[in-house]
Image (cartoon, rainbow, N blue to C red):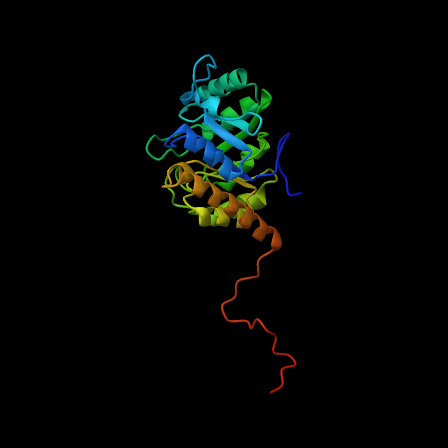
Length: 255
């Protein structure tokens, strides 16, 4: 079985989905199911962790999904570390998607602060999945820091631009041994398929599904695209050629 391994965790699905921006919690629940995802990410600073009152978490079945808390909206290493610790305490998990944002307009990561926070959290026993830019050198440093995976952006968060630099993603995949999970910027199913065809181990998305006119149908499309892209990668595509090559061989043809 083609299983995604991240630290001590194992998953059959290679698609992870977010929980923000849906028109309603009901649509979110249906989209999660249609996506086939097993990992669902939640922004710790944007959800009510107090189970004594209604929360987004009430709509996510813990028997179906593994929660991946994220440190979205953190702008310093200290904020991100504190938020991760809060998530571990409230949700009883060491799993964390680490975000340290460096710019409010672009939401690009602050990689220096990200690496600093990653080192601290790894030492504290967290399974760290850092959101980073598509920089192979930083990806290698995050691997060396003990992160369980790296999550390079395809394009700015919520932009829907697709993979802007497939060559850097390929280099990252070649340089590191831990899983590469593309995060941010995926807009439609073809973007997801391309990411998987590049050899990425997984994909995380939110806006591409939640912001679609029909989030449930788009979730299913993304599920199929990730599966198709992964299968195509494992199958080994034919090399690209400048000129035609006949599908039927000419050898033995009677002239």
